[in-house]
Length: 509
View 1 (tube, helix red, strand yellow):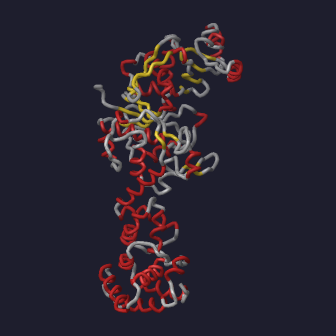
View 2: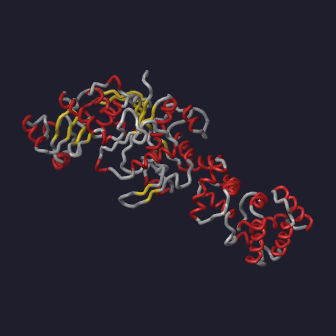
View 3: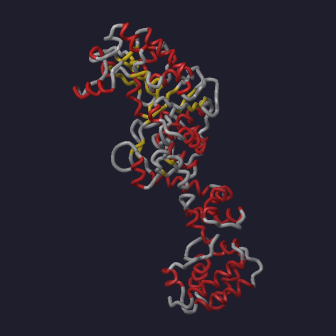
């Protein structure tokens, strides 16, 4: 193909962006960037009855958070705009008129009640060559009657006239050539006078052509529409510039059969939306990957490997590495199980590699939420650096690092029972004296002094160190003890030991 690669992601603003839609956007982006092409974000808001306020902003914010860059769109502008379909009515009217004038489409005046009655009479009813002549449309009504109804403001639709008996060939990058007989297709509605808007089918074709889209990369659920779209390209005289179709495999439930849904996420405890979503109608709040503590790089890496593989054993890949390796030749034809546990693993791996200062910035809202102040970014970064290897999500960092910011309010009962004996208060009192005498509290030096004291007094190393940890941390957990005491102010360490001696007392172990 000699044309510059141009792809589009075209979501409808009918609610939050599903994670399956995010993967579609990602694959479009990877393919465009690999081929030096353009990524278009087009908002397909032709279904006015399903429009949800805030959904468009949500889509833009989600893609921005994930690092999926947009070259042309509602926010970015571009030479092929407008990029919101509701603002392209004049463009669509021209092509609806063309199809009508050339006899490739027709007016239909069937009411919802009439269509319902037809379906009740025949459960297999479709509006096609076999039934159209029994319905109220411009093929069965006199021309003057059609004009009278339109002039009177009667609502109508425009339907595509599909001739039966044609073998329609769809060439798909992943699935090869798919052939469908036009006899099984219905005369789809292309335009609705009620809101002066086209349906998805016509708007999609017109926009893809006028925006010079070269590849239509979308979910497998749109594959049944592809034969209709091929016929529309031909009817409009654009067959020579028809984009290449790429229908991606579905994202499947982690357990059982079927397509991934929000219910699966609610049941198993994982998000299916990139960002938290507040439904403006119901008030329901749905969790998002960002708010649950996932890193955008991890989400991108995880999604990229659902239905595609790099052709080698690579798993952890940056966005640029994904761009470099991406190929539809390695896309699966079958659906991909949504292994959310693997997503947690990816986040754990990325969290470990995230620079400590960046983690500290991400962690600040947690401290603010808890009303914790007075800690420098440097202190926070060093504290998180010690525990990040134990965390899966950003939210886990508090569970691992809380003692760096708050003294223990209580002590783990099991650890108290196992690690605190009648002699412990006395030994901890001696330890306070040892620590007070250390000027250099670096980890290596403090460890040398304290272990020397333990050995000189014949104390049990494990008993003393575990009691020390229990007093400072509140439980027998956490990173190397002397790394903790190097970072934490010495008077804070000593104060916690004294508080533990007073509060736990001489409990028998």
